[in-house]
Length: 246
Ligand SMILES: [Zn+2]
Image (cartoon, rainbow, N blue to C red; front, side, top):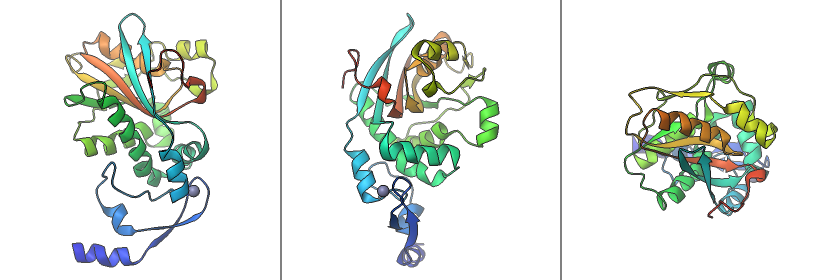
């Protein structure tokens, strides 16, 4: 098997950076290996764009879930520049090759969260899409990334425990109050399977936190022990305020 990989790796694959369009050479062997959170090289981003994203400082925010509990959200990169372009390629061009690279940064958000809460017994729960959007897109980007991070951290991923029961508008384009109304009651947790679980929600983008709060509220109402969250990116409008702790 190693010999085969050596042969494959001798033919470098030509790719283009999804953020700046620069030609990059990708070692095929690297992309054939299992996802390893902090050690693999990016395959869809050039060194410059990767470094630019790598240097962004992480944000950790506390979102209050009504009167139930504070929800801690660790988020990695501002939603702008290279990240904005690469996320667009994933969601609207069906470019799933970018998932591994994006997962490197999501794993760093989990790393940040693990300094604040115990993650050992946690289960990762990707924020679900409504079935209509899932049918249109064909995949849930949060689920794809959660699978990679779960694999790297040896944490289970549960896609059954939470459902989006109502179709909602894209949060990013709404005003703060509209976001809250938009996702209120949009999620439902499975009774019984939620009991006593320590949950980490996974999503691609944090805006006001209303979506994550709505998910957490549904999960806590069905007996989840704790709910926290990680997101790959945060919208600039949700940049540091008084409740942010990093
Ligand atoms: Zn680039």
